[in-house]
Length: 207
Image (cartoon, rainbow, N blue to C red; front, side):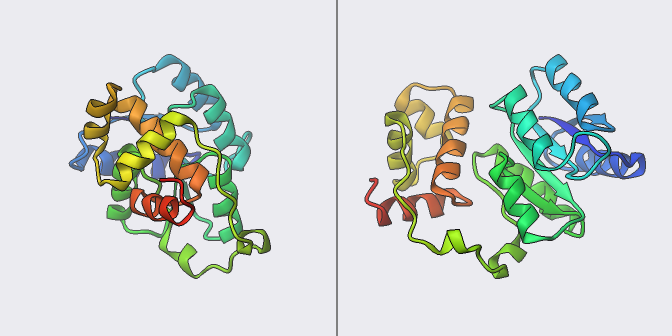
């Protein structure tokens, strides 16, 4: 696994690099001090697996930075690692395309778990969001999302408890492609993980 850490604090980058190198994730790590440097590394390293991005840095930052990574490489997942625990900022980062949001106050194992979940095609939502009041728009009954035929096939297999490897074998796809589709399904259903996706799909009669 190849990880890109983007943070303007060198001591924090060094500590996070040490954590990843000592973990069981088998990580190699690249570092960038800002989003522009990071985007150059993304272009030069097609084998990158995930970006861990500070939300607020000099220059390009915030949800705009998250979205910029998505435009640079749509299949490259981004996890935001931020000092902010403002629910509005969490929602903005996720809406911009982040697949996870981890507070810097969280335990080290939380970040490692979030990375593993996102690489497996899930999203990671911080626990404090469970107690955050929903915005008015979110209280309205959700409309059934428009899924492609392939996404519906994958959603049906998710509902049967199939793993990414099993889905890839069944549909003759690569696991990377399956991960990308699973991520898209979670985003369209506005859920955090595969179990929630299956439940939401049944409630909305999508499968």
